[in-house]
Image (spheres, protein in one colour):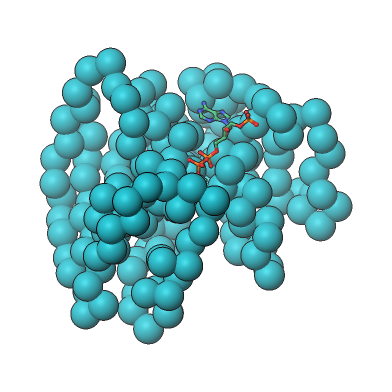
Length: 178
Ligand SMILES: NC(=O)c1ccc[n+]([C@@H]2O[C@H](COP(=O)([O-])OP(=O)(O)OC[C@H]3O[C@@H](n4cnc5c(N)ncnc54)[C@H](OP(=O)(O)O)[C@@H]3O)[C@@H](O)[C@H]2O)c1
């Protein structure tokens, strides 16, 4: 069985990026002096699954930041070749979340870091997310790309831990109640 795990930063009003994808509001507060636990989080993940929106943003970074294989779920990208520099590191797939997870299970993958607001919403709706580490940045953006969206029924969460940082960031870990 493969489980999906979320590690993401949001504005206090629930956005993961401005509408145009801007992340400066986040990056200016995360200047590397605080350890927000990413290394510990990623240590037991076999794979990263992300949406096209997240992949396209990360592509614009100076360097590819991941040391795990990345599966990008996208109907648009699946028809394109993976960029030369990312061959062996990235795959494109148009599978739906359940099918993608089943394929990964067949490849011996157990724990997946799922990233991207729309993709996380799909994984949550499909009951694929086991837990979420959400770091809340003390800023109100007013609008942007939301982490959460509509649901056909409530998803109950159990708060596992919560911690505040000197910068004002608050990090909470929730387990999805099955
Ligand atoms: N604050 C943070 O910690 C954080 C973390 C990650 C990302 N971000 C930011 O968030 C933005 C990207 O997030 P996003 O919510 O806009 O997009 P996203 O979830 O990364 O990608 C959405 C795209 O993924 C594809 N997709 C494939 N299967 C899907 C499915 N089952 N459900 C939903 N989408 C699916 C679709 O593209 P196709 O039409 O090609 O199929 C869809 O348009 C970027 O600006 C990124 O920098 C912030």
